[in-house]
Amino acid sequence: QVQLVESGGGLVQAGGSLRLSCAASGRIVSRNVVAWYRQAPGKQRELVASISSDGNTNYSDSVKGRFTISRDNAKNTVLLQMNSLEPEDTAVYSCNARWWVFRQYDVWGQGTQVTVSS
Image 1: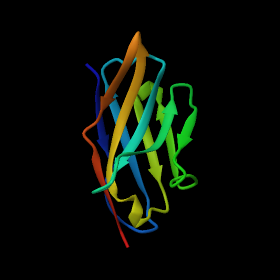
Image 2: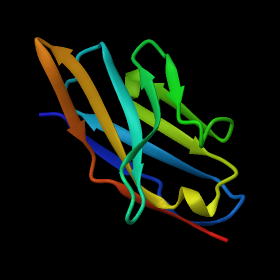
Image 3: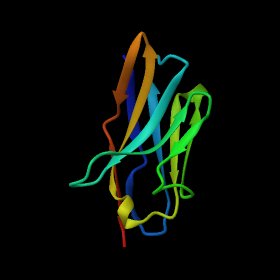
């Protein structure tokens, strides 16, 4: 049973930084993609950034140049470094792990709140 636990959210002023961590317990196949999503009140969930097991990254246009996603496969951890935060970044951030063995598997973390004050 794979579980994801996020940490690192909080309250920060505009222009500040936060680092989110997504720690996986349990066994995930070696080929996988881990992504961070966010959902603000009244808005749809959106993809923020993703990273594959071989290190390929993808970012939404709204966070390019400000956020960096990285992973430590030995520690089963994915980090999201968020710099130059803006009030528009306020949302619940959730970690997702996806892999494929005959079918697609998706596991979600519980989410962590990020609040950016102006």
